[in-house]
Image (cartoon, rainbow, N blue to C red; front, side, top):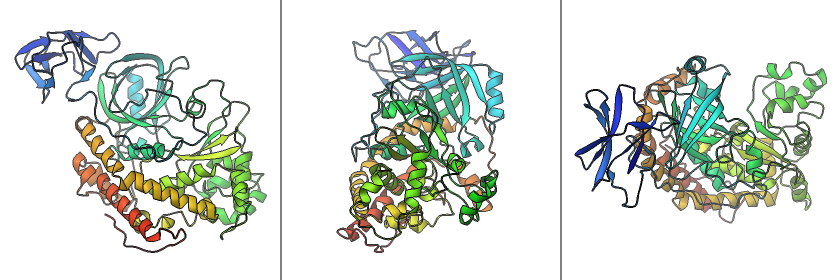
Length: 571
């Protein structure tokens, strides 16, 4: 039978398979597409086998797998594409239940891009000097083009030419372990997708925070990427374990909303980004605009659905930049401007007029807005829409003539609470007091409509029960921990390709450098005890988040407007 194993070894070494702890057979061949995938013929073992790395000349053993693999079935002609020192090929990865059906606007393609319980390998090859330059200039926006990418799953090898690679992210490009963006050529697709992001988890020793955020977004029936993992190699260098997400550039919009139909007439996709200094905003703006916004610009402007005025499209373009253009024409901000003007005229008190529900739904998909707000509170996302006017998606559904809201990038959620936030409000079960809920124009006004408040409370009750009370979130954490242990150990053994360039505030520098940058053990990061003041072990977060929400909901059942207090549990 044929044995196949992925291993990154120098030319002075070779790999072999050991059958039943006594017979050694060299695997002298490699796959035509990649030098990482070693292959060779050997008999079927009676009981078990394992892979070893040998000196090519002396055949002395250099390294061996610390476990044995079960003998394949008698009918098996070949092993799967296995990975050296990873004891499993397919893992038991528990998936969260669908708390709610997907929103009607979602018509997602069926795709194998995210396969449950598997971690494919990406091998990117190209000009070494171009790759080195990319890593040495990690703060610059550089595209390295004309690369080759080989995708290796347990049973497939796919080759892609003319691939583009760049460093991605904002804060992550300041870290030693860098994140990447990958773009395939227009003539090639990987299971219907062309653009991807590799999320480094450089500041997350659990390697699960974003996974949990995206998993919960999908469970809430919101438009979002799914999340899986890949092992990355660039040329002859092992880079590490990465989160694998869809980059929200074409063809993502038609894949998410149009079932992949190339004739789908898509609307504009915007992203919301947080505030910046007023001097940057006012440059080039008219005095009329500056006067109108003077109360805002004395502090800061935000992507919080404030009304900037009809003659000030420039500000909307700044705070809601276009991620993808519509199928026809140029991005039109009219629907967004109309909604922010409508929102600015809504009262801060309870509204009971019978036409108010239709008035809101004339502008927005209310269900998507309420679910996204609930998602922020459930995940404790302190860098999302509610708390920070950041990392949200806004889609112009031209068919229904509504704005659709969702979320992305959950790296500051699920137990990570930065010092500038009131931890009691973040952790508290009284979700009305979560940062931003009482102060954001949208969240503070939409819940003044009794029907929306009742719906939102029901969303929180049902999601809390399905995700936390049921134990679903904790079960997913446990299966991810079992699946990722060996890969995290491998990742942490590798030298980074970047440098630490983050100039940290004084109150964070010691905790970040001592705890995060020196590495928190994986088990401790997941299960505790806590070692970083800003990050609670994710299993403990799941327990405390569930308990606090359950306690508040129990107290306020039947009292949708109550703001009763209860003891807050936090790490």
